[in-house]
Amino acid sequence: MVYVRGFLLAVPEDKKEAYRQMAEDAAGFFRKHGAIEIMEAWEDDVRDGKHTDFRMAVKAEPNEKIVFSWIIWPDKATAGAAEQNMQNDPDMKMPEGGMPFDGKRMIFGGFTPIFTMGRD
Image 1: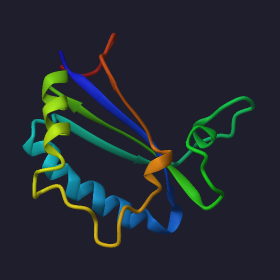
Image 2: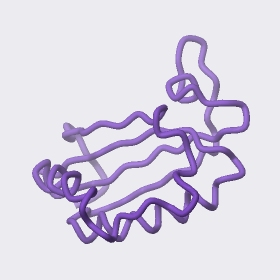
Image 3: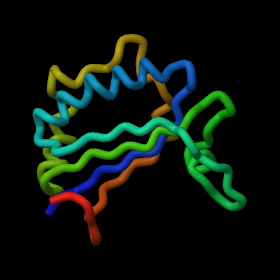
Image 4: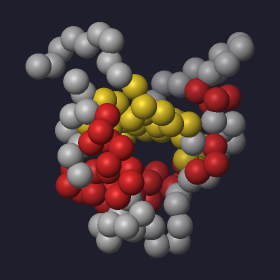
């Protein structure tokens, strides 16, 4: 059964292209290690909530946009192995000038689907 690693983060609006390039570069590593699908989605319609919302979850600053992304893996073991290999694989490099976002505020986790529709 597929396994999903999901990510939520805030990226400064003026670093959108740097983030997109970083994500594209990292996608090769993830594909090489078995990822089935990679999605990086830039904020388009993220509304403020009364009690909680995406912006509050990552403590987004006024100049930051929300990125919601996920990687679909064939299974949890493949996802875990890729995570272990990240530190030692030369294809996984730190972007020049560092990460274009504050990684301390990134939320991430692993998920097992309980319902899907629309894809085989």
